Length: 50
Image (cartoon, rainbow, N blue to C red; front, side):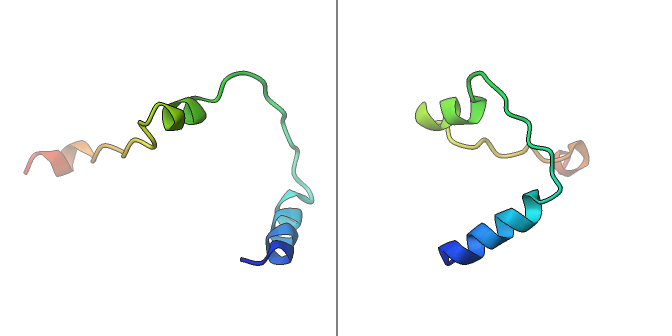
């Protein structure tokens, strides 16, 4: 995606948005740097019965 298109898309999304700045450690970043990455969602209980 070209930078100008990405910038325009973000601008459209955030035009009327309220941006909340948070502080603290990012759990997702910590998982990624630990090598765990993104954990898959577990299937719903009815799918596990098989």
